[in-house]
Amino acid sequence: MSEAVATLTEADILNDVLSPGKGDLDEKAARAILDFRFSDAAQNRIRGLLDAQNRDELSPNEQGDLEKFLRVGQLIDLLQAKARLSLKK
Image 1 (tube, helix red, strand yellow):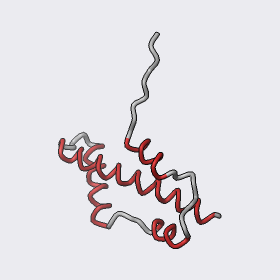
Image 2 (cartoon, rainbow, N blue to C red):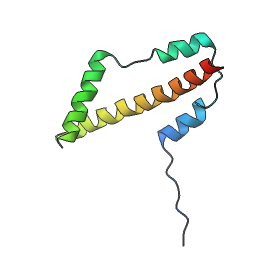
Image 3 (cartoon, rainbow, N blue to C red):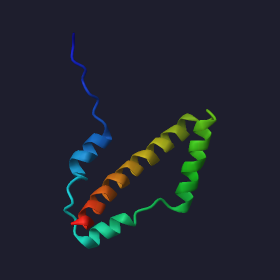
């Protein structure tokens, strides 16, 4: 029986680099990171892409765009987790 090899994801790499469980940001940096948000236009685009995906009407280009938005969202989530932890200290 062979051992399954885990697939390395961008989220795994970012988690290693950013160490979101380590609250070592200064207060000013942490507060600035907590202000990171997608613009209204980007949020509308994401909603449109998700709606198209739910209707199975997403083109390959749109699928690529959605994946990019999701990866950036994951990065923001990791940074904000680190920022919240930093402010708790």
